[in-house]
Length: 156
Image (tube, rainbow, N blue to C red; front, side, top):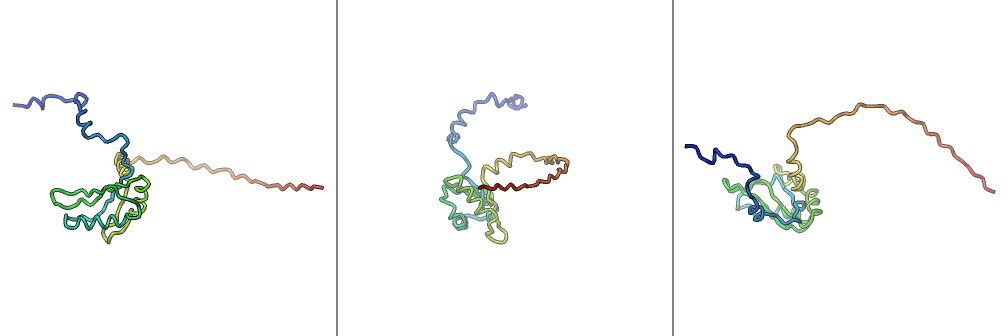
């Protein structure tokens, strides 16, 4: 016997999400512009996690105070996923972190890729299909010859 739910069409506009929105809402002034994503970080288990975090903090020590640092973990393997979210106190510090940490060579196989979180969101929303730019036809400009004349004034 088919399920009643599978036969019923559900429109998302008819569902009240206000309780979920209220529970997980971010403050109005909250922004992601002070968060950077550090990619190509070595994948480690719990035993080496603290040492890796210490090394990462040392790389960014001159940028400014780190407000928070999260290293997501793959639950199936128990190891890190190879990237870190780091939040600084100001957007300027996050910009500096990108300059300091991007292309930083940790070892032979780990060169860090550091990006602002907002940039990842922005570029993630781009179209997957490449659209080539329109190339304007070349038009040769006429060269103009400018002659300077000197004027000499004689004063008595």
